[in-house]
Length: 170
Length: 389
Image (cartoon, rainbow over all chains, first blue to last red; front, side):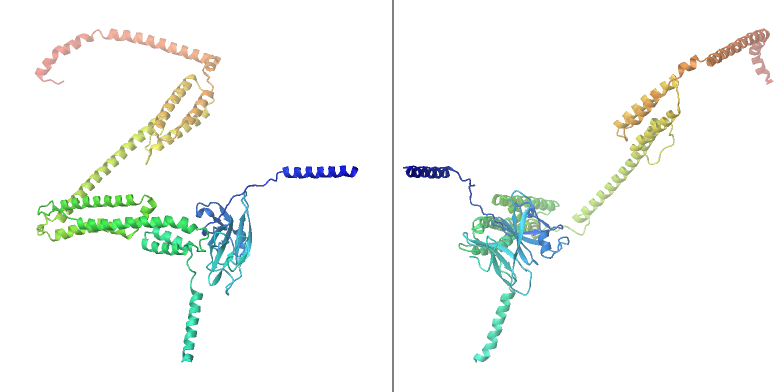
């Protein structure tokens, strides 16, 4: 008799727990479709190593490329690099210029005036270790597109939305 | 035979490889799009059309160069529309040029002197009419100012400009060459160029005379201005600056007036006291200075001197008046008393002397009166005898 009542209590407790967990609401933000891309944007590098996005309206703002220029071995104050190529691909900026060794990915931090950046190393196909005739464009299909990097005297490279480099766009 | 072909095949293969390696990158949609826009902007419609056709083929359905159809659906159609409109208007301009050139009929030429004027009037009216007609074609076909500006760089537009600037005049020249109008060039009086030259020369002489007259007037006006300014300076400085100033300007009047006020303030600082008469005189001078300053300021002859005048007025106000002390001092009273007594004594003595002298003169005048009447009666006799003595 006692064991039967214990079982009943246990069942009731389990039921109560199940009801409580069912009633608890999981807070989740709704989402919608958003794709942020731009065409290729050539920008002039200023004396302080920054570029102005307002050169190509409707974008506005500025981007200080001094850390990237220094990492590429340029003196930002002397502005050896006169122009860079910028392209937004899935909300991230990609920057490249002639004389660079890498492609650079810049990820904005929404609500701030800063962005994180990282190097995407490019393996040279030719004797030249630096990029020549570099050109960014979107490539692929609407379901799966890539960032295409054309280079002079070398096969194009493709960067997927995760920032991985490959020889072909899947 | 195959052995002979082998080097040639190898050479061709190596050349092909080299050409492939050295070939520049194939234009991608971005480049074609930008180049087409530039060509359209510069009015190069043929080149723009070629590039847009290439772009359309490149981003056709299924192309991986246009993943979301941005070029095909959003960027290309406006450019194609602009190209279509500009081509249409360009074609209309070509037709307009052909039609206008064919319809150009100069007026009948007569042998009188007014033929040249008639030609000029005709050409002006024709050019004006054609220009407005051309502008109307453009504004009707292209509403966007950017497209209108781009169209002005096309060959069709340049052809219309040539029509308006050259072709109309050329038609006139052709018509006049075949006409019977041959002015007698032997007589220089009838040569229109000579007549025009003489007219221009007369105009030039007249303009030079007018210029000289104006210069004289300006010079006289400047001289008058200097006289007025000198007089004004003498007035506002109360005559302390009588020497005329060199190259005086209107603004100098106020400056000299300010210097005069500074001198007045320096003088006022030296006074430890003033009489009521001196004070009244200085207050009166201050009132004058205020009027001068008001007039000069209103006439915009320099800076406002109100501050200096106010400072001078405070100095006059602060300077103590010592009229009463002077009147009540004992030394002054004694001096006044002595002076009054001396004056009274002198006056009494002078009066006594005058009375005594008057009596002496009156007693001496009694025998003199008949002599004076004699003189009056004997004068004719002297005349008769001619005795000058």
